[in-house]
Image (cartoon, rainbow, N blue to C red; front, side, top):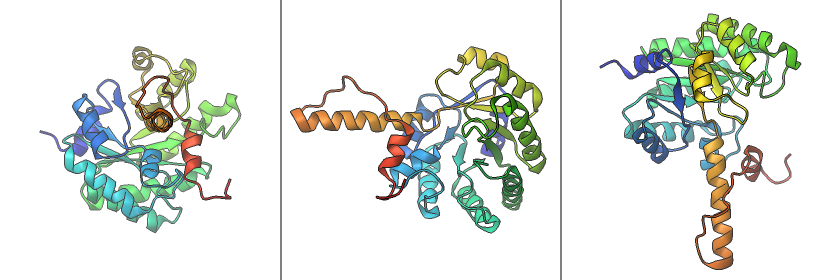
Length: 270
């Protein structure tokens, strides 16, 4: 049997790896039983369940406790979304990566956000050094927010994403997460333009599973979408129970990412 870290690498070269991102150990165990070949956390969902908004605010000890609890109950590879490393200080990023590996992760997501891509290059280099010291073949999935944050004009998105992909691959990344891309043409161009396995986010307008595989996509993530629906459903159930004393599951709908995140922002802050 291959080690879990080697398994995670192989899963990115064997069809389409579908990850229904989770927030806790129960969710992780559930999706494993449903057939997920690996388990991935949602950084937003993990932050929310601990009472923090998404956006590099979750204390490291809360993240580590979550990773430890998930790793304890599953037998498949675990990859953890560490946002932007929870810091721009490289020593702190190294501490975060080391801690999640020690807790049981064999993969990470790390993102560039609105920062210059060179910063993520340095973070990836640090993550690779930390993993090598721990003798873990860490799968580093580099997320670029070119699409999610509209960092460049629409006609430049493919070229900008591929330029960043080359930088991140040279730094030690193993995968490219182009979160927010939905166009078949752009997905195909990204798959052709890099040798990194392409990860896309399950958002409205995305091609079907079969089409994604044909285009060359190797990883599909739910992101925070499942958590958003669960909180929306909780609100509807709670409201109905307060009004009627009964649990009525009709007319359930998801909250948006913004609605959930806003619940946890301190009063008076935008």
